[in-house]
Image (cartoon, rainbow over the protein chains, first blue to last red):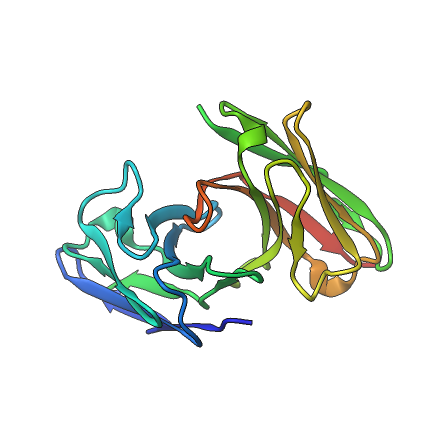
Length: 107
Length: 119
């Protein structure tokens, strides 16, 4: 199985900050890496697919990069509604696997 | 508007069975692969199972293989998860999710249904 490791596990930041979350795969997954945002009590929301493609309707302050084993999600200027938990997911092969999540909190 | 609505969750005793349903609307259900993903409250997301668009190919997490069966009825626009031999560790919120395109992640999710396995 492909293991996905996110860092950091939690992060405190302020509105307006630039934030980067990283995700590392245990083997190459090409660009088959997706990012989700989840708020308490809600279903996950797809932000980025295939590493760098912005899902329709997602603000442009979200961006993704990387290929192979190392990936990043960047939020260019944090907004109040961005405080949530973020997950990476590899869709290269089954079993599909998620990172453990990064909880983004208000400083 | 794309909608996925799960149902069938509830309290079940260890060793028991439950069938989850996911009713789809607002899109051509028969054209999309679908996933089931679960989440213990307060914990991370865990993939459970996947089915292709016509139901001919399925895949399962090792933790549920042999106990859970994913299926679909494209005429009824409904996805199912038959869960047998349930264990306490199967307790979670279960989400159905549409695969936007192969390898592109899940672009629509249901609201989730809670399954509690307890005596």
